Image 1 (cartoon, rainbow, N blue to C red):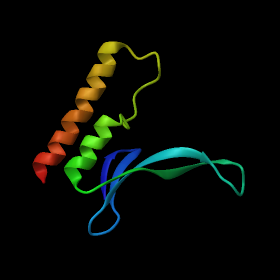
Image 2 (spheres, one colour; image 1 turned 90 degrees about the horizontal axis):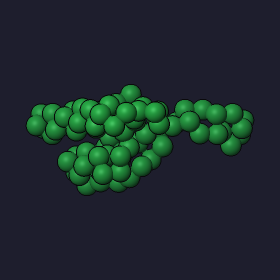
Image 3 (cartoon, rainbow, N blue to C red; image 1 turned 180 degrees about the vertical axis):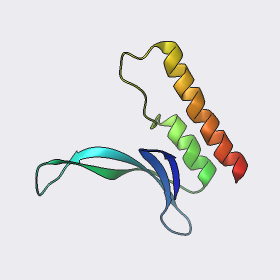
Length: 90
């Protein structure tokens, strides 16, 4: 498992598949109460494809809607830098 952020991870499901999972608030079917669960966001054949999928699907958490454009660009660049760092360490 590779933890990308506090709410985003890549998990090896078997020998051929990786999955992206995101921690989200979901409503429990039994209790009807909100709970935090890891939600599946996509399948990938290799780590580089999974990391690119995170960027392409914009799965990373951004601040609220009042975020300034410069702050938004900074956050995206920071996430891209973290992903590039992980790829280089492979």
